[in-house]
Amino acid sequence: MRRVRPIAWYTVLIGLSLVFIAPLVWMLLTAFKTPGEATRVPPTVFPAEPTTGAFDTLLGNSQTPVLRWFLNSVLAATGQAVLVLAVASMAAYALARLEFRGKKLIFGMIIATLFIPSFVLIIPNFLIVDRFGMLDTLWALIIPGAAGAFGVFFLRQFFLSLPKELEEAAVLEGANSWQIFTRVVLPLSKPALATLAVISFLTNWNDFIWPIYVLFSPEQFTLPPGLAILQGAYTINYPVIMAGALVASIPVLLLFMVAQRYVIEGVSRSGLKG
Image 1: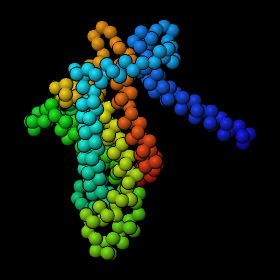
Image 2: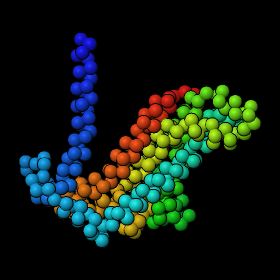
Image 3: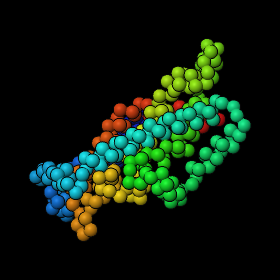
Image 4: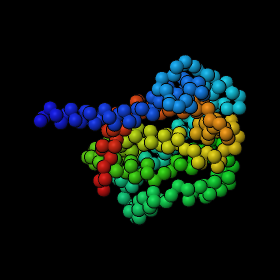
């Protein structure tokens, strides 16, 4: 009986892994097919005549500067992740450790914004971005999401799990609040910071609706709206679309492989304390 349970668990895990990996494998194989083979019925799993024509079409078309879109996505996602870490960490530390009037009310108002649908904020954010002259620039993708409520909530819960004795020892050594925050709390919060950075990066990287509203020039596009151009009005070149999706997914997979240890530790330690 003891041997049956591990085998059953491994079987379930392998099955779930195949469910998640199969679309990625299909995307990879389709990217090396010809347009005719990609739409063949019944479909073929492996390309009969592997070709890089889809990548040549994707990267060799001046009207679809994929590499420029890729760079824009990297800059926008990285910039927003850095800003989110800076803003959310300071706000979360104040709400977790500092004592001031109205702290619970402020925290409650921040949490309440999580229940507001993002589509409701599109027009107000657009007007604000327009007023500051950031339309059709990458700043329009970086600034508006820099003060999200989720990051504040997530880091606050992690900061509450840290022992206060470390901060009290720093106070005895003559450290002020800023020194405690930068030299004690932040170094101990690398798992949570890495987790929030990955989440913020992926949120910006995969955003499709907001860039459509604020970006007008093709050279300013990021990958999601840019790759949508590859889909024609009457025909769809599936290998080209899959090649574009493959280009867009590589940084995400690499990021997760590098940060997965910190992500798992950060999520496991960020409970619902407090």
